[in-house]
Figure 1 (spheres, rainbow, N blue to C red):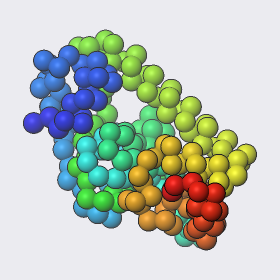
Figure 2 (cartoon, rainbow, N blue to C red; figure 1 turned 90 degrees about the vertical axis):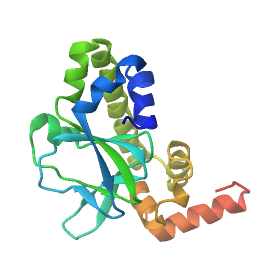
Figure 3 (cartoon, rainbow, N blue to C red; figure 1 turned 60 degrees about the vertical axis):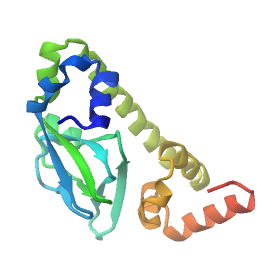
Figure 4 (cartoon, rainbow, N blue to C red; figure 1 turned 45 degrees about the vertical axis):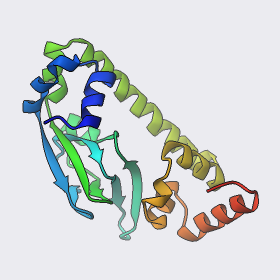
Length: 197
């Protein structure tokens, strides 16, 4: 069975003909992930890309002082992986964890290559997704060093609609690079400006 969100990703985003989607079922597995379950740990070598069919994941690191730093959230229809670990066969510096009970499509190394051999357009479209991912990461780094907490929060709301209702506030604050207290202050100031949060 191909789940609907993943089916749409394969057909609309990657261009796999809808009549041939059943071919793909041998190239991935479906995993039900419990809330707070970790599916990638620091120190492991990642061999998978995760597509979120249902639920919510996060990628984070833990510094020497034991503080968590959220790198990325992945709600429905998002892909998440430690690309550096995958491509360079290096130990991951990150954890990937389910914030909610989730259904995740686990695509092992070689998934996109196998599709590309049959559907050559997949390689180009997957490369565009990768380039867009790199662009977003560069923009995120730039935002962390050059924008205000309020600007970062506003960008967060655009990137992740409704996530404030699903993720704990301390995780959102970590993603924004601020304390939970600072996030509360930002939200209060926006509320005073009549901005709906």
